Image (cartoon, rainbow, N blue to C red; front, side):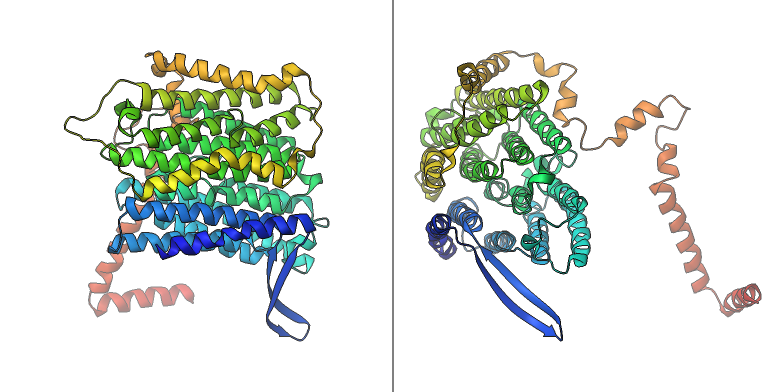
Length: 549
């Protein structure tokens, strides 16, 4: 509980950020670690309104998650203490990344996020957790490679303090950083780790997939924002495809947490696409509003799983509004905010991004994908609502469910309050509504029409029984085969080339399995010689002696 009060006390950073914004302040704190002649190593921290506001939101959500975890994970046991300290380490890594204008210390925070997230994903110590942790860790390591190359590259500019040199960098450095951020923010083709990381406990999912790990890539790109390099149609296409793929896959998924994870992926695609359209402030604004309602969505899902006997399949839930009405109402508030329902916090940021996008001279294809993804978001949200709240009761017998007002309920109350008010409050405070938007009325209403159409299509799909077993089911349930392309490529190219044994094919025999077989045989031979007598040693010595002569 001490950590809850410590993190909540840092919410006053929010008022500092407003002060910095009004007065246009930017504070740099610099420590000289050591200097030899003309060479100096300095540690630099930056405090401006972006970093202070993001820190305040991260620490507020973290305090709610820690309060929630004291009930969900237990108190004063060995495993709960391990969990608490891992979460605190995770938050410290994120804060280090936020306040660093130095690429080297950003790498420290970035690596800290990757390592601690691995420890949190494998927390339950099952085989599923280990595999999920491995795919999470290895995908994030790919991004570290890009950052390391960028650090080496920046040596030629004389400093790692990138904020002073943004106008001078060669554009390939920006591409390297964009690809590194794609791994952390799970854009195509690195998307498969995000649903896999759902093996972590629910409070971790709430923290990791709302405001910390996945938004680290978006935040890095906001820091490195350069108008010339970021108006980029190729990268915009990747982020739009991520939006489309994740929205489709969420309609074919039955795991409660995976649906919410895929909706996070969809919103990350929206943030990235607004960045590549040059709308950096709106991207940051959506990042903040999304962090609040998405953490609420995860925490409400965690309470549902908690009361449903650790069950995550939405087909086994139903009529939950009768049993846990308070949690379900908070869940629906966050779902509606996610859809962009008018006058909730998600509406202000999403609507502004879509309207400015429609003024941005895009072609019709990208234009329609934006609106189509808006409708799909409403579609999977209403499907989730239908299965968990309206569907007829499918509970396990003798499972008594009633709602206690515990610390979990208090944490979701505060987040619900902010999910309703945060969007409009932020728009007034940071003056984002000063943009004068002139678009025709049908275009103004089209975002609302697409959301309502998504609600309608979602209810129709929920009532249909057979659409899931269509030919597209395998494509969308496997995330466009992003987990592993190799099996499908093998089936396509090598299946009809020649007959092969059912137990072992040539790819395995000449690949890893054959190599390990021969390594084993060679090591056995060496072991046999080592156990032999002096004659073999002398013989082998003589042979090599003559070879070298």
